[in-house]
Length: 273
Image 1 (cartoon, rainbow, N blue to C red):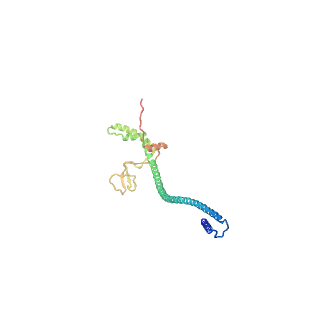
Image 2: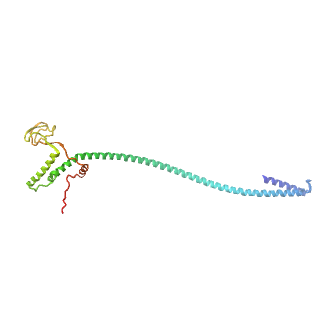
């Protein structure tokens, strides 16, 4: 806008100067006015040159600003692209994180279920072990007296040695002699630790009224007879009845050793010089 005004003023001054020079003061201007018009025209032209120079510098600055703006716009577009990439990457990471969270939750549920099953199995094993311990204790309670009685019979009367010995080729006198030793020792053990009494008061060879075997099994009827009827029979053996077994008390270590090893009588060895 400013350049257009200066151009217009310069154009008017040039026209006035030309008219004044050509028309020889046809405009009736004062003397020496041509000099002032020329000077004003030169000043306006100089102002026009200065304005043009300033405008060119402004154009250069504007081009620089435009280049900077273009560069900044390019950088902004690049940053926007990177931002979009980061958003996409963030979205992918969120999706993966959600997937991992789901897998972790499923794994936790699976582990919890496995743990529950393992705990239930462990409880069953504990119950079974307790039952086995109880059975072992019961078995030991019933087995220990028998082992202890056999051990006493072997220790005092050599019963196991006598019974397990092959006496096929041994003379009867030797067998009788060994039997006396076994009899004395075993009788001592039974009389000392077991209360044994005859089951029947009648003497052997007497006639007795035997009850029905289905009702009373204290008498074993031999020979042909009616099982459902009362029978008169000859007493062959009075039978035996225990009124109590009073074995010596063993220490806990001895009981455990006997139950675990089942040793009735230890092996014997002699050190010879």
